[in-house]
Structure formats: structure tokens, C-alpha cells
Length: 326
Image 1 (spheres, one colour):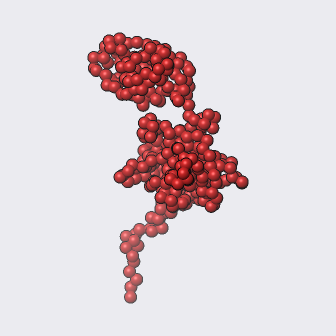
Image 2: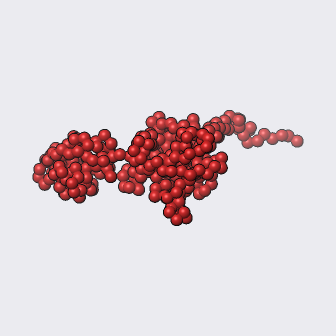
């Protein structure tokens, strides 16, 4: 009887060579998981009654027990605990959280140094690059998924209404419980904090850039909160009539309309009125509320700032000192 060659041999296909890329992919994921998973914890949050609460993920990045997670996992919790992959259950306390970026910083006091994961940078990420997510989806501990960077520089609306900038989009599968876990490159370094999925969609998941997280952690350690500037107004986006754009020689047809002025706030003291159209802040156009929020960073607190606004048929420039957002 003749030994008939299989289809691959008959076609002259080298199976070993064919499988090599898959083996490399598997090794990259396995290596990343092995190095990072010991530092990924389950975060348990409970309310005042000790009953209802949430669960998510987090990761230890200092041996003495600093843990990054999502604000929405821990915000408003009365008690917090973390469960390590080694089976330790440790009480945790909240150093601070920032709902505007959906990040929170926890601290546990271990008896011995904890396993940690290194913080990398998202600056060098490329679309299509392999990334790995580790977390506790639906209570399944230390679950690993892998995918690629689908897009960079996305913006995501936080629960406070502000935009989270520099968000990483990935198709690495995330589910409830993954929130707060790390998104890693294949060197095992954290490049993002997993934060959201699009309900009803598949393969559309988001992570806050670790570069954003670094600055938030610094602020939380220093102040227990992230400090931002405020003009003391409530506002909404506004479209400008074409005649306004031409008459005032504006660079865009959008601005920010003042809907309410906080009594005795910076805007009120400077003379800003309800209905004014804010078009510039220190010479930079204010195209929208999101654009204004980006301009009102920490370094503007109590610094003289010139605002340009339109009031009926006049352009007015006023100087004020933004205060810290309460």
C-alpha cells in the first residue's frame, strides 16, 4: 500500500514554518502573563451596610502596596479590600480618586513586599501592536486576553461629563470586572488602565493611557485629589452666526456660552455675565466646553488670565484669576 502524502505535504507547505508566527504570538502572551499576573489584584468595594458593592481589578506597582484601579470601581465605597493571586485578602484605603479620568489610587499594608508590575509609556504605541489585558472579569480571577491596539488618541466621556483624552482603543476582550486592570505591552509593562467597553459591541474596548495615570497618581499622592482650575461658570457649546465670525475676525464658528455665573467667583468678580460668548482664553480659541476644560489645568490656578468674550455687538477682554475647582 502506498503512503499518500497529506494535503500540506502535497502542496509543498512547511507546517513548521506556518506555525512559527503563532508560536511566537503564544510565547509573547504567555511571557507577559507570567511576569505581570502576580501583581494583578481583585478589588472588592462595599457600601455602609457591608452588603452591596462592586468588584473590579487593579494592579500593584510599588512593593509597599500602591494600587491603581478605576474610580468607578471604588467611588463612594465605605470599605475596600483587595484579593491577591497568592490568596491574600488585604484591607485597602483610598488615597484618592479622580472621576474625571476614571482613575483611583489605593494603598494596602502588606507584611512583606508584594509582586509588582512595571509602568511603561503609551507614547511609543503603534496601531496594530499586540497588547495583553489581565483582570477578573465576572469574578474569574487572573483572566488573560490579548488583542491589538485598534486606535490611539481617542476621547472618552467620563461619568462627570468631562472628556478623558489620549485613550487607547483595543480589541483585547474586556468584560465587567476587568475595570481597573492593566493593559500591557509584550515587555510586560503597563501601557493603559482598562476602563470601558461599548455595550452591545464586540472588540471595542478602551484603556486610559498610563501617561495620564502617572500625572494623576502624582497629584493624588500630593493632594489626595487632582487639582484643576475653574472660572466659576456653567456653560454650554454654542454655534456662532457667520456674520459674527467675519465681523470679529474669529478663527472658528463655535464658542462657549455662559449659562450661569457663580456668585463671588472669578467670572463674577471680573464682570462676566450670563449670555456672554467666551471665544478666547489667553489668546487661544475656546471652541467648546471640552476645549475649555483642557485649558483649565493646574498651572492656571490663581494666575492672571485674559478672557475674550462677545456681548451682543461688542468684543470685551477681561482679566481674572481662576480658582481651584471644588
